[in-house]
Amino acid sequence: MADEIKDEWSRFFAHWSAATLGCFLRTLIPLLIRLQNPQVPLDFPRWWVALILAAIYALVGGIINSNLPAKPREFLKSVLLGFALDSAAFLTKITPVPGH
Image 1 (tube, rainbow, N blue to C red):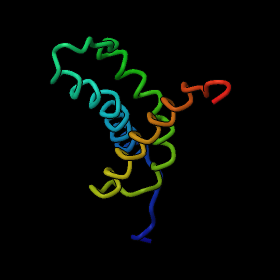
Image 2 (image 1 turned 180 degrees about the vertical axis):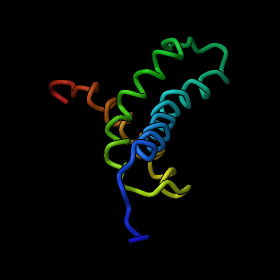
Image 3 (image 1 turned 60 degrees about the horizontal axis):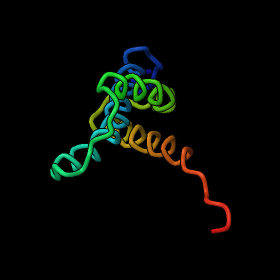
């Protein structure tokens, strides 16, 4: 059957790398915005630490989207899923203030 979608490692790695890019962009974009104001101190980990953390978060995105075909539209979905995964990880670090 020619229309059958098969799970392959190459497809997983393609979507994993796209999701990694999304996670990394979620970390990098606020830094780029802060770079425009030189009086604001920068608190950013080394770039390779951020990339490794993004790759770890993106494993979930690679697994979820590995059944999608390797096309630009699906890669964009993986990038956005990686962006969302990193945002969710960031939101779990925020704790509500008691009494508010």
